[in-house]
Length: 263
Image 1 (cartoon, rainbow, N blue to C red):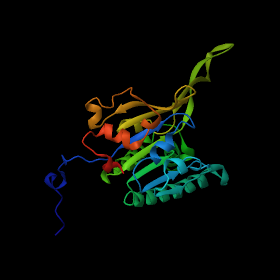
Image 2 (cartoon, rainbow, N blue to C red):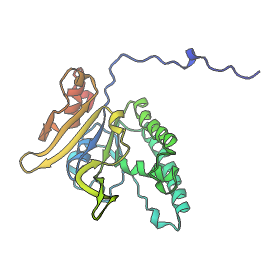
Image 3 (cartoon, rainbow, N blue to C red):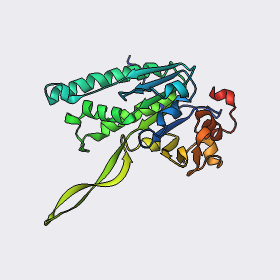
Image 4 (cartoon, one colour):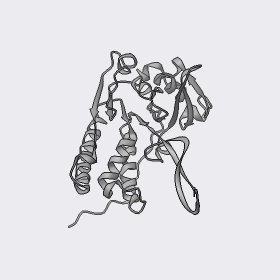
């Protein structure tokens, strides 16, 4: 006799109303604006998925002194293999390694972050679409696979961060001498790389910056947490200096938490 099909009553889950003190966010901004540093101030053990060739040198020594910090290092060069098919196979292998390592890491740490998220968004595109194509025809399966990866962080109740690089926004304008044709041009506006829906999926958007007058600063772009609803860390809040600390931001986000919850 075949097993019975699960009923809706078997699949529905009870939502806990007890506070869960974890925080997720995306750090956006130019290079050298303190994005990695913020996530190194989060509770340890910390596991980072690192794609920056320079690693964390010059940051981890100051921001995470005495903490348990581990790193998985990643690099991918499609031009290093002989043809497009080989590049896609290499990307499939590397994406499989990433899934295996991140599923393990979720059970081993209190904080996990991708440095940088846009690398892994490009990697899954290479793995699932020929040549990392930017056409939208086959994006739906890829999008849902990537989204499920983000959702799994919430299931494990860990702090989770995405650090993203930037690129110049391009636009179209009529070609000089032939207005019937269009040409691309750089607008000078910098936008974030990576999966565009990431800010929607995570709790806080951190817009990082630096200038001569203020030094490092962080503008809160979104705060979908208990404290955000109560106005303790509303959209547009600017944090400076010592305020740019994970525990400080977390306590503003969760007023009922204590410093010990973020150690």
